[in-house]
Image 1 (cartoon, rainbow, N blue to C red):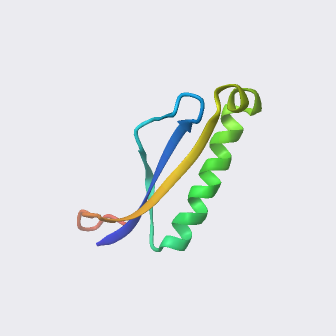
Image 2 (tube, one colour):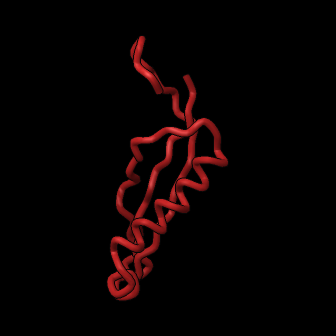
Length: 78
């Protein structure tokens, strides 16, 4: 079964580095839904980190939505 996986990436424009992409634990049926979820996750993470650290460390979020083949055990809902 093919679903859309969301990967979140946190970067700093000051250091020029990004952390390794983190695959979120929810899969989506379409790119539109994943895109909206990525924006919301970015907002949530920015709120969690806070204005002071975002500005001081030059943090920004980006994300990738990509197709992924999911193997679901029989009888387990997706």
